[in-house]
Image 1 (cartoon, rainbow, N blue to C red):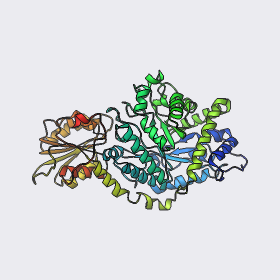
Image 2: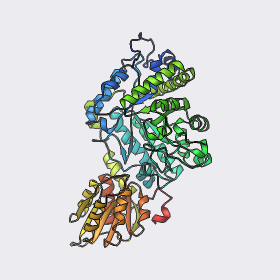
Image 3: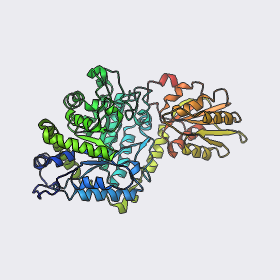
Image 4: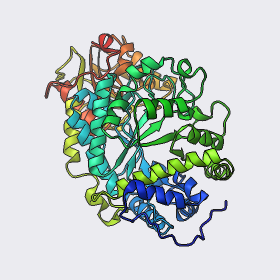
Length: 548
């Protein structure tokens, strides 16, 4: 791949104090084809550290953003050093334009940067607690930790309205099934992130919360009209746009009743220009979900073709996160298109100007360092105060679904079995009931339980007075169903989404905790033992009658 890197020094610089919009326009007008194209590309990579190819692209000004995954992180100090090195390299380019550095730190189930970062109970727990202040502080604490690492953009909040119990890929990542409540909590979360120095990217426009498939492996087809979409899934976006959300991520989702075919919304100018820009009035950046996902490739395109269509449809940046050869092919293909297609060059130029203006406004803020200081990372991560807050939020979120056996205070000789897929659940159960036995079975969040696991749980459970069971997904639902009529007493702690409880109406005692960390399970066991009364309110309405 050839990138023009030996260019004369320009008088223009990102550090010029001129008006952001004016300076963005002037820099864009002076850019080469390769520099324009670079700004619209968001790349990720395999392995820890930063590979030479990414460093080459950064040094040549050939990418505008990078995405960090768990696979890239050996420890947080090393991550901060890697980010600082890339930003310093970017600063040596002609216009000294910093990189967007992004990840998915939604909280709860999706926590891409791990190590010492905070374990929060997640968005559905925030929805159950019901306080915008909790959403704000969640965004603020998680954002502060990202900012300390030099990560300046978060692909969050998940603004999807959880309207379909089969939408398991969204489930606990959503704030709930009420559109207005989802919008309010999303906006509060985004404000917290902003105040911590991190740009939010609301997702997955125009709404993934009713899809019964995962767009990573399929193209979900959502059977709704435009009016239905406007009255439900787009309400959070209306609220976020009014509150100044800086960026939106487009989902690989088909709406055949609206478009008349299976074109993904991420490739649809109707959704991006007519609906998002014109009807909703969005002025910020539009960024695709990953362009190696099957949802965008399902109609026979390769990633390079899909990226070109995405930019033509109105996206400002395309995300290619995984495969070096795919990134190289995409870069070459788009470079040729910018040079030979005047209309496409115009699209890319307009996007580059919008990106530069967003970067100028963001990086000029006084509390936003361009590069992190690796020496102080572990003083700021976890964020001071975060631990106490997330423990309190976990307790506020616990929701009593049914409680005939609460408080559960077993006799000294009672035989108790703790059964689940999370070590944290078993550890907190043992802390509460030290004489209990434990059984950990294999965890697979998307598939049904193995016959040997089901047989083992059935055999063990028959010998106990009480089984305390953790349900999290279809896998654990299979196992729990087998306990009907076998165990004398079954108490259930539901984590992630509580929708699975509708399939086990015979369970007489169940609490929902939503998170999978120690705080969430400790809070759940506290309610079961009668330490305090659960105050959380079920944040999903489509199962309310069935669960209560």
